[in-house]
Length: 422
Image (cartoon, helix red, strand yellow):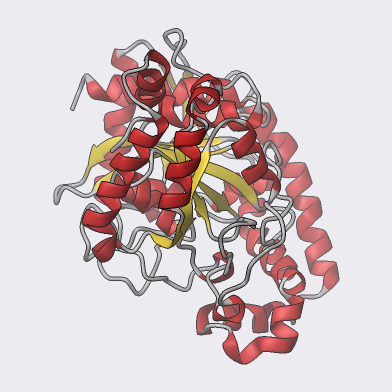
């Protein structure tokens, strides 16, 4: 993998140029993307020319001219945006979405569009897991996670409505960051659920993803300038532990033991009943909103929508508004309860039920993600652990809404603690 921080430092020192980094990415793409299928469209030569023409200005910018893979639901003015759907084959937006514009402002360069599942739902796309081509990379941000894992890009963007950043990051063995809800703008990004859609990022390690997030958001999110503090970590007794594989439970125990050895405090807690109820009703909110966000596609192109998403939309058409409104009220109360629980604390929990499932017929389950997306909390996948077969296992740090930097610091603490025990 390519460390965004290390590449940025080498560019800053003059040991490397932005065009040189693009060359490294191009070599990896040529060598591996034929079998992995991470990219839906590429921009290599145009980006290389831009990097060469603007080398001095890029070197002084926050992202130092680093190339970025952009999920193919982000509108881009100079590359097609197809939303993972044949309905939009060859579709060319007139303008960049907000996040892509901010990426350019920060001195990043769009290397290409990464593969997404259809309209960010669970219909698998063409991408394979770089760690084992017979396994899913997760979804919906499948191409972004795979591109970073295969060294084809140091940074990639994603979105999460259920588990579409944290889960593929875990399956592919990279760092994934789902910020607090609305920390990064969704303007110009294909909507699936306006109450849940959250822009996130992928990079090799926690400090790398924090660096990229800081540059794009223009916020103080970097965690590489001083050692992280010692966190208090909560282990949840009553939230889905029976849904985790034996390897994943072992991974959580390993992370907790490593954190304790490094000085962290570990406490066991139970989630309040209202939070458990919010987990139950999250699909009501997501599906009700998806049926309306995709109203044009459903009403005019139903036959061109895949069976997985089509079935969801058919079911969602029958959800009464009263049920949706009740789910929203539960979620609002649950967010207050979660914020109280996470005041000064962080939750340590699985990023997924286990390692990436074998086969390409599924993107895996968002079991351990959709509650935290619904709560709007910042979440980080911490890479580094593996199951008995060598596939990556991710552990997840969940922080209080709006405490994104401290959540990244807690994740960096876990990442460092794990390096000392594995």
